[in-house]
Length: 218
Image 1 (spheres, rainbow, N blue to C red):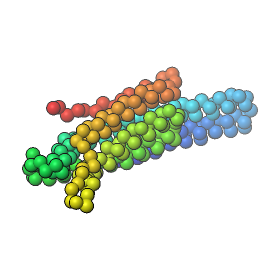
Image 2 (image 1 turned 60 degrees about the vertical axis):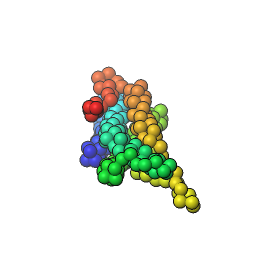
Image 3 (image 1 turned 90 degrees about the horizontal axis):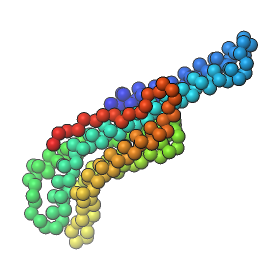
Image 4 (image 1 turned 30 degrees about the vertical axis):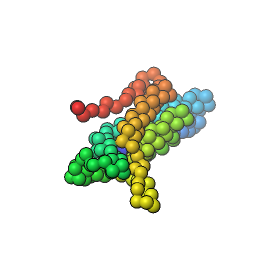
């Protein structure tokens, strides 16, 4: 996935850069030959540039949707493990006999440690910020914040506030796990809606579509 994102980021910038070079060449050719008016030259420059701008926007939006959906899908497999670790910690803090075996909890720890970094989501959000407009960038930042909050919880799933008396209070509660995951899903969907509204579609453009993510059967 890292390679796909890097290639996509380079491609977004390349499309716009190519349009600028091509448009500038058209203006220069017009000024040399004198066969086009200044307005025609300007239109020859602006046309490809506008198409490239809209194409770059759509590519950036799709890049973020892909990265965010893949992160949401990857973390979904860790939700149950995180919930049970927090439940066990809460029971321990209250002196309740453990419901889960040590082996089961250790397996959960290994599962949660495999949490993916949302770094690719951040990279895609930055690309959206470069392409704009502002409402889409704000929606993209909501996705990033939701992904970061989920990642922080998974990384600190067994964190506690320790008292001088030896008592402790778990930082998280089991319900927080799926709540943060659901928040990520909501922000992804909201971004998709806003991206379609501000996609800058022109005639012949392909609409932005939410990537299809396969869900595990329960």
